[in-house]
Length: 269
Image (spheres, rainbow, N blue to C red):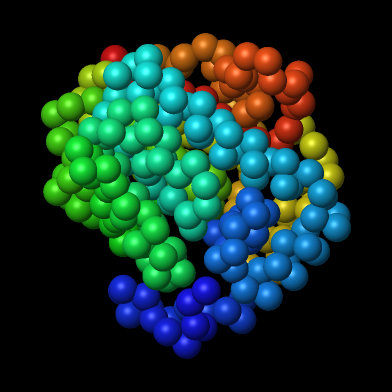
């Protein structure tokens, strides 16, 4: 655990007086990179909606299945993971490089605590590469310029936006960010998106609305139609945008439940 008074690589103070979504998410995933204020907020949330832990872990499992498909079936070897959050288990580089050691991954985040733990993300196989960019999802130009130092944007690349677009309050702006990032990637690239969704679980929606009013950084749930709109202009892979446990579940796994977290994978023609 980093001392609360220390600063990150970007010399920004880590504010431990206010709960932060990345640290709460880490807590729900069973990680240890969080503070009492995050645990209190996480426990208060789960008291209202215990299913949030299932959503957090189902989101990570969805990402793992996406990456497995991208490496093993689509032949992708480059990944741009924006809004990566705190490292826990089965991070993008771990899954990709386990299957293809030559894979190259760029992580993007702007949270001081995430930056302080960048060393955990910067491990890589000798054949591949893993880099970290300190940038905001609202600044696609900066993200692309920095990522180009590690990734070759003339080659197919997978853009991963996992539970990050909900932090962009305006849906039109969120769509524009996706458009700008995908425009820089060549034909044969992929977009992976998953976010909390409305219209499935009213208890989840009530808990999230209460969280957003608590003073923490808001996270906006989207309708399934809004999440699907991120894939406009792309070839959406089967089964489309679905509740994440329903996206290509692994053989032999229990029958998946419908939860308020939707995602999909699309290919750029």
